[in-house]
Amino acid sequence: MNADALPELTGGRFLGSWVADPVAIAAVLLLGGAYAWGVVRLRRRGERWPVARTAAFALLGLGTIVFATMSALAVYDRVLFWPAAVQNILLDLIAPIGLALGDPLSLAYRALQPPLAGRLRGAVTGRTVRLLTFPLVSSVLVVATELGVYFTPYFETALRVRAVHEVMYLHLLLVGCLFVLPMLTREELLPAWCTHPVRAALVFLDGVFDAVPGLVVMTSGTLVAGHWYAAHARGWGPGVDLDQQIGGGAMIAIAELVGLVFLIAVFAEWVRAERSRTAELDRRLDAELVPATAQGSAQTSPAGSEPDRVRPWWETDQGQVGQRFRSGGR
Image: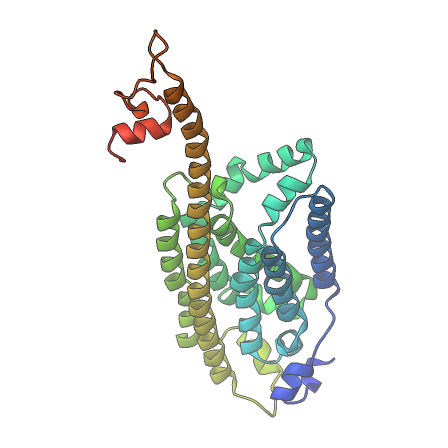
């Protein structure tokens, strides 16, 4: 539809206006198909994959991509700034969280044949990827990308040239994933010092930094793509200045809301990791306790008398259980 001929954006039109984006459709089908293949492959081998992770990947991850690129946000982004601002923040912040919660890399490692899984792991943990996913680097990239999109010719060019618009979509999504994916699922991409408490602190700070682009857009005296939006004047809706202020305010609100959701997700992963480590330790302790107890019970005097009950078994046991007993449980 011609951007200049669009009717006034109302609540009903916001829900009912959709446009097909062939590139986005292809990307969603490719990602969704690959993920579904991995889940099916695991099930055929008798292995389970969490339903919650599949739902997060499909609904929050791919669903956000579809909504951002094909809903009314995409229909009206060439005549109003605030739909474009919301569209970009969805791709930059919310979609990466959904994709990361689906943990696609772990699924790929388990579903692929060992040689292919090894190559994928080598590529993911390579020097370049580790540099880009270093917490401070990836956080700066997110903020710099948002500011670069709006305060360079990038955004206005994307409004004029459809191919550039598609590149911008992909750019925002990938940059967001560089920060979110390691924080939620991939520990091997992070430095050793980036424990779960440190991750929670970094995510909190990132939530503060993510509000900067919206604040700058809302308070800037420079109109973002001002020539474009002035040339596509409407007889309805807010003026260009107010439109930009609304867009900046929406960016701030969404960024802070996403920051809270992101922080909760990090804490949930922290709890899950601690439970997994505790369960593994319990299994190891149980495995060591049984042979140690059996060995203590089997010790008898040379004359075949009663077992030696003077020295407790934990004084001679060399396993982790005995060490803990001897150190007073520390």
